[in-house]
Amino acid sequence: MKFSESFNMEFQQSNLDFIDIPLDTDLQFFIDPTSIRALKTNWGGSLEKLIQDYFADVLAS
Image (cartoon, rainbow, N blue to C red; front, side, top):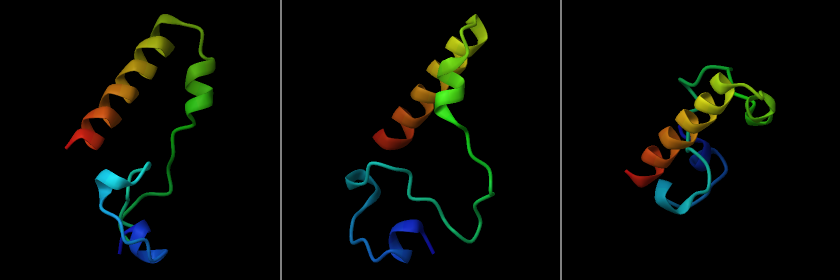
């Protein structure tokens, strides 16, 4: 069951502003974007761009 199904949302992924994760297989792990953005290093900047690009690709598909 996906998150949207659990809350009776009748939308497809392309109409949602979040990733519609499967609740029965998702790990209890998250990435805190504010902590990544707070990293004022080259690595932090690269990581932020990689994450943004990844989710842009996910939402585009």
